[in-house]
Structure formats: structure tokens, C-alpha cells
Image (cartoon, rainbow, N blue to C red; front, side, top):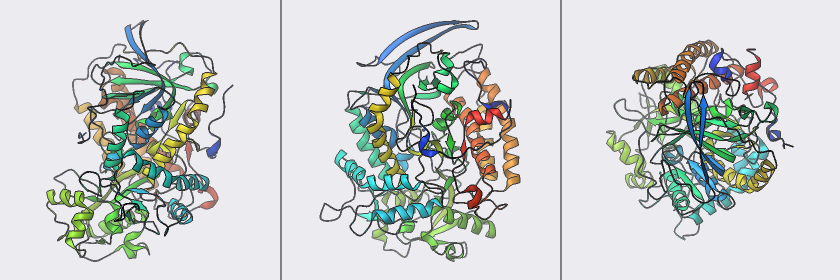
Length: 625
């Protein structure tokens, strides 16, 4: 089974796939979303011990029911599985939630890759929390609010910052090897851009590399997940769409809820039915929608787009954070140069060797990422240079090698000894501050559907994420979602069971025999998003991108219904809708705030736009009836 042959009332086509993109933004009611009912390079870290299963025997408590369905277009066979909780994505949010949910429920965790690859794995900076007597909760809250530029939800900021220290210590108890001071009790803390104090904890791991925090956190979580008898890990599985009660014909759209997901088994080519009482989207961000990104290849915004198609509310998609310093070498794969390098005193210099950031922000090289990215962008455009340089050569060589061993080695392979020469850098898409809008427990506007980590929009980051707050948000919200899980499960189990779930229809589709049909569209989207919807925007460029996406969408939609489903086709379908959500959100916000900067509206407009941008599918569809 691959996909539906055509649109039907049971499986309606997304409005953004059939009509010109438009926007209808609703007043933000952030904490009243969930009304009670009557988230390609293999990484070193792998999952050999996680019971890899292409077509696995179900463990106790997981039901496996083959179902045979006859359709006018032929025979469709769906294998149906059931669990209490289905988690889609295997970064720190997904793994953390899996461990805690499994204490009270049977969990199935879906991951795209046979080797774990996620933005968590690449996180260099660290995790921010108040772990020193020289710091305070009030200061961390203030720094987060300043960075968020008026759009943060202060109650959420206080929750995450207040609960953060306990969650970081919990990671240490799970086996994460953080850098500690000589006394062995206190954390060795770093300072990054936008922070007023040293509060960023770095994990060193077995190698002692303090710039591989995300990888070390993921290693510790993976070991715990591997040992848990109530967590089934499904590698090489890709979620395609969410299962909805309304599509079964047993619930009205106004009383809809999520029942699980259609999941493509990459090894067999079958689209399986994965039913669950609660589904959690932890699929990470959307960096691959841009030409230059620090994200892994799997970051195609799958969770956001699936939630959007299912009718959940999406917020703040115009706020895409561009990391200001990505290693520049057109002949090799780029990689991130941590903000911690600037935190330790590195200076940005132009082609003439002049420090320039004070011209663009009084905080200079320690300004927030949006300010630094715009400063670099302006300096490059002014000089016509391909990059600028990050200079830490004034620091002792031994200090640099010890503090940034991974960055030092990677740059050395790229031909730069950072103890002797400045690092060539350019901005690159790095973090999605928007996502599936959730309440303070991680619940989306669609009952039965949670979103955690970068896939979600909690209200913490506002218009611009403060450095190293993302890992903190992931572990805090994973814990809170697990706390709320018994109540969520109990409420959903009181509802009538939806017995009839449609299989994924193959129809008359054929195998795609020309990969260029996929790769060309993929490349077009990414290049045009970089050119027209990048760090600095203009309305005419947004309109041009909207119109170009309309043509691309028609072609991609034809591929989707004509050919048998492949992972590349699934991701391409998601990527074009994701691009439209970013463009539509950016067109609505007629001001400059945080990560969204437009030359047509260079000032903030607090009267009309000091709020979340909120978009849902039902509102968009109403514009095209």
C-alpha cells in the first residue's frame, strides 16, 4: 500500500494543495486549545540494541491485526498495529517522552532512519538552565523575554525556566556526562549570545568533546530506551499522515480526534496503520526547506505539515532562526560553528579584517542570533563577499582545542586551523521557532495529538529563540506531557471507539522511474526559499514565491497521486506545504520583529502584530469554497 489514488470525502485534499495560498489568522488563545470532549548521512550513534523491526512481532500489549479491504481500484491489504502511545520522531523530545510515557503505557516510537539522525544529535551549544548561585530564574526569564521580542508567553517562559534546573540534573542522573568543575559537584557553565550570565551546561561524553552536547544527551537517552521493555522502536519507518476519527465516518469534524498515523515501512514499501490513543509529534524542524541549513537531511517539517493537514492550529511559522555562523566552503558539506565560540570571545570580521557587529547592534558579537545573522547578511551584501570571518586566534591555542575539539577538527579537515586563522562563516537556516501550537502540557488543538520539541510552538521562544533554550524546552515539555498523560488517556478512552479505519489506497499508481522528477522540485523549492524568504524579506519577493509554489504544488501533487509512495515523495509533498505556511505567515506579519525582518515594514507594530500568527486548515479552506 502506498497512497490514495484520488481525493475523497474520507480523505480530503489539503486546501494548500489545491488553491492559491492565502492567510486567515485567528486571535491567539494559546492556553485554551484543548477543549475536553463529551516533528542523510548516518551518524555514529546507532540503534543496534533497539530491537530493529521491519515487520516485527508485536510485544505484549501491542496488537497486530492484518486487515483485508476491497476497493474498486483493486485489493488493498493493511497491517494494523495498536499501542497506547505513538511517538513520531527520535530526538531528545521523543526519547525523553518515550521513557516517561512507558512508565504508564505501551509505547511505539517511529523513526525515519536506521541510524538515529536528528537536530539533537548536532546540537553543539548546550542546554541553558539556572545552575549557579551567581545566576537567577528572574535573569533567565528576562533574557528569554528580551530575545523573544514581545511574542513570548511569559507564563510558559516561567514554567520552562523554573522547571529547567531539575530536568538538567535528571539528565545527569540518567547518565549524561556534563562538564563539571574540579569539585565534581558544580556544572561548568558557558555563556552564549543573549544570556546575561554563564548558564549553559555542556556535555563532554566519552571523548571529552564539550561541543557535542546534543549527541551525548541522545546517547544516554538511547541506552535507557533500549533497555525498556515497553518501548518498541520502529526504524526505517516514515509517518505519512495522521489517522482521524472524522475520516472513519464515525465522528463529526467538530468532534474530531487523532487515532494514530499512516506509516510507511521503508523496507517493505507497505503503508501500515499505526493506531494509538495518544500520538506525539516529535519530528524536529524544517531546515531542509532552505538551501543552506545546519539541520540533518530528515528535517523536512513532517510533523507540522501532518498536523496542519489534520486540522490542528499552526503558529509563528514566519520566525525561522538562521544560525549566523555556519562553516563556509563551497566544496564540502557545511557544519555549524557554535554560538559558544562567540561566547568565549571570538570576533566577527569582514574581508578587510575589521570588526563590524557594533555597527549593527550595541551588544556587538554577543548580540542575539537574529541581529548577528542580519549584520552578517548586510556586511556580505555591502562588500559582495561570499562570507565573513569569525576570529578566535587571539585566544590560547590549547584553550581553543580543548574547549572546541570537534569544531577544531572539522575546520582542520576543511583547511582551516582555527588557532591560527579566522573561520569563514555564513548564516544558515537553523531553528523553527513556530510549529504546532500547544498548551502548557504539549496538547495541540486536535484531541489525541501532542507536539513536543522543535515541532511545537509552546510560546517559549516568541519571535526569536534564546540560545540553548531549545533542549531545555524539549525535556521540560516531555516531562509535563508525561505528567498529563494519564488524564489524557482516561479522557480519550471514555469516547466511543472508532472501529473503521481506512487503509492507504494504492489505486492505479506506478513506480517512479525518474528520480530527477523529485530532485528538481526539491532543489527549486530550497533555492527559491533561500532567495525570496530568507533573512531579509520584501513583500514582492514573498508574492513571487507564493505564485511559484502554486505551480510547484500542482506538479508535486500529480507525482503524489501518479506514482507509488517513496520516502522522497512523502518529504517533497511536505516540503512544498511547509514552504507555503512560512510564506503565508510572513505575508501576514506586516512589521519587522525578531527573526522576521522585512524592508517594506522595518518597524514593529505593537498595536496590530504583538501576538502569535495562528493558521489552521479550516480557516484557509473557507477562503476557497
